[in-house]
Length: 493
Image (cartoon, rainbow, N blue to C red):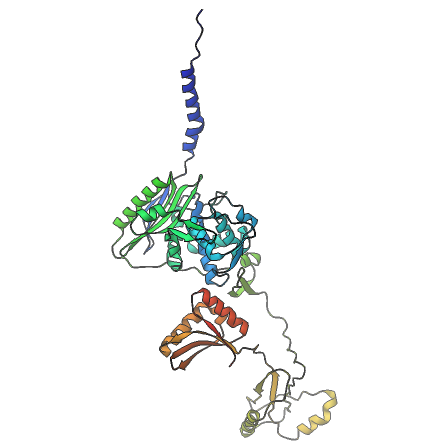
C-alpha cells in the first residue's frame, strides 16, 4: 500500500496567500490618503491643488505652529531665547523622534527650538508648549486660536508635536498657509528650517529634510512629518530669482517617493508662476488671549498686555465704577484748602497777584515729595464756605477780606517716574524721532504714556523714552531686547 504524501508545496502556497490576504492587503488598503497643494508664495495664489481641503493627519508639520507661537511669545516678551526651561516628566517621556531630554533637566529655549525645527524632536516641542502656556491643553488652545487668526479654518490641534491623536487634523491648504506665515512673519528665524545641522544643547542634530534641501536648487525649508496614519508629509519652500513656491504633500509612501513628488510639484510651480508678480505679504495676526476670553466672555478687554515668563494677562473692566475714594495723605503732609464766601468775588488783578505769590512761595514741608498745584479762579464767582462747627471765628475773620489764593500740596503720585530708556544714537534728529515713533508703536504696552525726547550730543542724537519707573524701564528694555532692539536704562538725573 502506497503511503500518502502530504502536499507540502500546496500547503506553502495556501499559507503565503493567507498572509497576503490577512496582512499585506489590509495594510495597503489603509495607506494614508494623498493630498497636495502648490502656492505662489509672493501672492498666496494657488497653482495646483488635489484633495487640498481634506482633513488629514499632519504629523510633525504640527511643529510649524508650535514654533510660530514660540516666536510670537518671544516677540511679545513672554519668554526669551535664553530662558531656562525645566523638562517635565511628560516631555521626557515623549516617543521618538526626540533629543533624549531628562525630567528635571534645565535647558535654554533656543536649543529646544533648534531641536524641534531641525530634528523634529517631540520632547523639545512638548517642553516649548509647557514653558509658554503651562500645559499641553492650554498651549493647544492657543495653537487653535492662532490657526483661526491665520485663516487655517479646517485645522484642529490637540498637541504640540503631531503624534496621531483623535481630532488632530489639518489640510494641505492650511499647512501651506502656515508655512507662508512662518516665512514672512518671522524672517529672522526662518533660516532655522534650512540648517543641515544644528547645536541643540545636548547634542548636534541633523535636519530631517536634508535630502531634499541638498538635492533641489533653491530649497530652504520648511518641515517634514511622518506617522503611520499620516504617511510621509512635507511642506517645502524654494526660491529661484524673483519667484518663490511653497508645496505641501500629505500621504507620501516613503521619503524618496515623497521627495520625488514634491520635486515634480515644485517644477510645476516654477513653470506656471509668473516671472514678475507683486509681493503681497500676508497680514500678521494680532495676538488674542484666548484663555482670558474663555474664562470671562461677558467682560470687555482693556489694554491687553503680557507678563514676562508666563502667559499673557488682560486687564478687564466689569461694570461701572460705583465709588471713588479720596486718597489719604501720608503722615506729615499738609493740604490747605481754599475757603471763600459765595458773596465775594475776585478780580483779575487779585488772581494775577495770587498766582505770582504761589510761584515764589515754597510749599509746606512734608515727609514725602510733594507736587505744587495752584488753585486759580476760572470764573468771577467762587465756591461757598465749607467750615467745621468749631471754626466760626476763623471763618468770620476771613469773610472780611479778599480771598487769597493758596498753594495746595499733595503727596506725589509720580511713583518715582525719573527713569527712562535709550534706544540708540542716530546721525540726525529726524532719524532719532523716526525710531522713537516706530518703537513706541511696536511696544505700546510698556512705552504708552512715556515722553519721547531727542537729545543732541556731540556724536549724534540720542533717542530716549523718559518718565518711567525703574521697573517699567527694566521691563521695556527686556522686551525691546527680545525684538533685537538695542536698549539701555537711563537713571534719575
